Length: 414
Image (cartoon, rainbow, N blue to C red; front, side, top):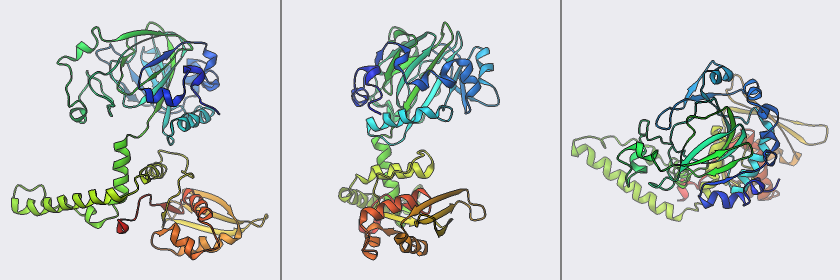
C-alpha cells in the first residue's frame, strides 16, 4: 500500500503531519478507504448494531459540555436522547482498517500508535471548546457538520488535552507557563473560523488546535484517526526508566529527603544530586538510538502495541520464569517449539514456533539460563550461527513470551 493520504490531501502524509497546520479538503466520499463507507460504517444504524467497545457521550454549547464515559446502554438509545456519541475504538469492529492504519504509521516512521474512532451527532448536540493532545485526521461520512476551530496561539506542542471551561489539569501550569486569557469566553468570541463539512470532507488537525462541534443542525457521522505518537520527552523518560532502573542506587528510597530536619534531609538530597550528576555523564556516552527500541519493546510488553517489533535488534534478553517450552520434531523435519506463558497453574498464552533442528541447543541453553544474556555472548558460545540468525530466533522467542528484551545498555557497562 502506498502513501494513504496523497489522494485525499494532495500531499504526502509526512509533509502533512510535519507541516503543523490545519488543512481541510473537500471531494467525493469515494476517495476515502472502503472501510469508512461500507459494513459497520455504511450508516449510523449499522454502526450502532455492529460496534463492540466503550462509549462516551457529550452534549453542550461551545462554552460547556464535557465528554464522559457511559456503560450498559446502547448507542442508539443515547442518540435518541439527543447526545453526541463517541465510539472510542473501532479497530476491533473494522479489521479491514488495519492495513491502512499500518501504512499511515509507516509513512510517519512511527510504531503502532493510531486509534480509530467515530462521532455520531444528534441534532443540537456536539462537543464544547477544547484542544486535543495528539495530531488527528477527520473524515466526514454522513450528514453535514459545522466545525469551528482556531490555532492555539498560546503554546506550541501542548502535550495535554484541555478545555478552558473544565477543571484545569495538573499539567496546565508547566504547559501554559507563558500565560492564557483572563477570560476563557474570549476564545469563543471572534477567534474561531467556521467550516461546513459534508460527506467527503476531510481535515488534518494538529495537536493543540482549539475546536468545537456544539449545536449541530442535523444527524451526522464522522471518523477520526488519532495518531498517539510519543513525544521526545516520552521517549527519554521511558529510556531512563529502562536504563537507570537497573541500578540498585536508583531503585533505593530517598529516606529523609522530605524531612524538615536538615540533618535528615541534607544527606538524602546530596546523594540524589550526586546520582543525578553521574547519570548525566552516563547519558552523554549512551547511544540514544536505543530509546526508540525501548519504546517499541515497552509498548508490546504492556499491550499498547499488538505486534512485536521484529525490525529492532536488541542486544540483551532475560528469560521469563512463568513460561514453559515443549520441544518436538514435526513432519517436515523442523523443530516445533511450543511456548506456554502466563500463570504457571494455568497458562494464558500458547504459541507454536518452528525452527531448524540445529537451533535446539540454543533454546535449551536459554531455558537453563537464570540471568540476562547478550546477543554477543550467545554468538560467541554458538559460533556456527550468525548474529542475524540469533537475533531473528530471539525475536520469535520474545514474541512468544519465553524471553523479554532489555532494551537499554547494561548499567554496569555505563
